[in-house]
Length: 64
Length: 538
Image 1 (cartoon, rainbow over the protein chains, first blue to last red):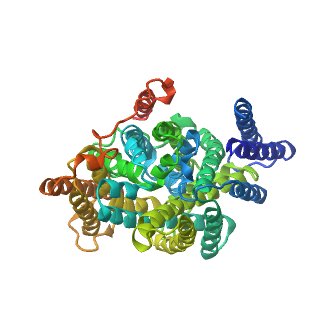
Image 2 (cartoon, rainbow over the protein chains, first blue to last red; image 1 turned 180 degrees about the horizontal axis):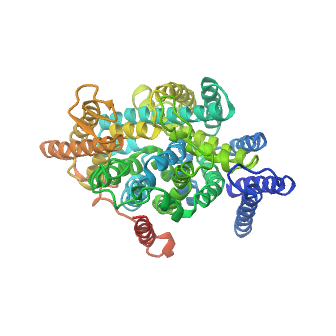
Image 3 (cartoon, chains in turn purple, green; image 1 turned 45 degrees about the vertical axis):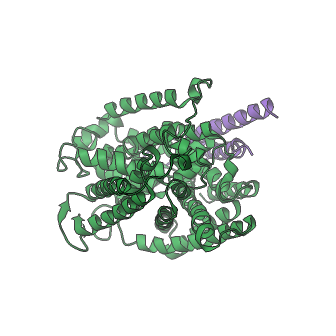
């Protein structure tokens, strides 16, 4: 089994949830920072998750 | 928070169903990038996250030595020089290698002491997790320990080593992505590295400059104790002979992949301090900045550095990200425990049960034993978790255990792999006396008001210094006695040691492989990066 597939999906999903929270509940902030932490962390996880899925997809295509 | 946790569990369920194959060895078929990440992730458990942030707040950037000095050189040595013997000998575990190279009694000694150590490590993970769940979710310590034990039991019982390895990799990615934002936010809030330097004493922000004498640096260690104790004995003992990490490389799909496993692992390892130590240092700065952030106090008074990471998370992460951070933390505790339990499993089943209790049974019998051992291992870990509650700094306790078990072991392997004259009696005598020397040193010296159970011959400036010196004493004793006894006993014929000793083994040269697939260019790259990092934070 290719570990990149489940971990790619995991980060894509978590990323989507966090981005969603960042956009629809932008006022949930922590005490010591004014940054929209959910939005930016979510975006980076989303990108990483899709990147993993792309790698897995390419690998699956080259040696089926 | 709850949602993220459920997601984590759901992911774990999927993992568990998909993993099959060899319960104890993964059938030597795991791809190299997975073994590399698992190699360092097996060590990124409770100790690293909570302990390293705590040490960062307590000792400053010197803590990074646990990585740059205390891991990378040993990992490189392991990949270049030692892996050919481990992988090539077809041994299934580190104690089994000792049996092939030396004899049955050396293996028995190592198997038993290793089994004790994994149980301790696993117990410490459980203790840390119990403490965390108690603080964050308000669960009672007993309930937390039992609940976490049940989860770990569930997935190691079903999936074995492959499941543990795959979990480790996912947990590692989760830790990196989940904690990198915390490092960035907290350091930015503390005014960047320049702000940290301006607000802390200079000996907290320099890794090398204040190591001349133990009184000048916060760790209370001088340069010799640091380099010889941590950088040589403890780190080589851990990374080169501890079956917990070696097992990950041995699961690789080929000899070349097994050798590259620790080498590739050094690259992420080198940059982990920025994620696990920097937040601790930043927390110390923030507590001095009148922002309303302070370390929680311990019952005995004084700041509780072990809570640096969790309190920092509560200050910087909003609902959502906070849940993910907590999930990552819990996942890492559990995979730390799982790693120890799987290693304990393999060693108990192959090296204790199959060798002494019931040899020659059909394979499915040993599979059953492996599963039963998982249950026993977890139960023993719970016991160890309650022992751990009696010590305040988790890191120090673990170093204490390593000092007594791992330090002399590296001397035995060094002689066994590179000196064909070393004999079985020599190795065994050296190993037992080396361990005895470690215990004796621990019991006859004190540090920070602890130890000295037999006598008080010498007082160390800090527990760190004591740990490092115990390791040095144990290693030297083992090394010298092994050589002396080996020379006095009859050597083994060369023919019996092919594939086990340097000089009698063909080390493969992959001259045709691409540069990034060969060990030597990889090593040069790693050393170069390492020098730059150390120079930067000198």
